[in-house]
Length: 118
Image 1 (tube, rainbow, N blue to C red):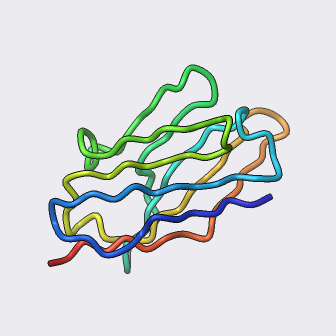
Image 2: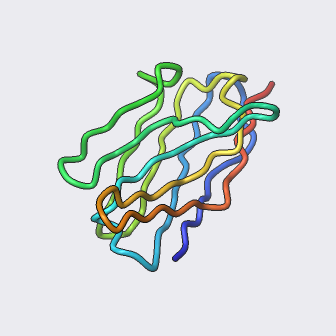
């Protein structure tokens, strides 16, 4: 099982980035996919989640209207489009895959750094 994030980097405030998470080794279309982030000295927090069926998305209040989560089941990839970035969005962003029914399974990516600074 692998989750490989990419697309992080340094961006100025107000800029945009698109994160990608390529999955392999499990039935991607059956899993709830999420993005989390962890800033220095803070706990990991949920940013956005997208269900496996129906494609229902939910977002943290801090990113609503600025971030969009999407998935391409044909490519086994989940994306996070981040617009109007703010310095407080600076964090390591992690991809998460969850099979919520028995037997439950959860997988994490290695993370990708996003730094918003002028």
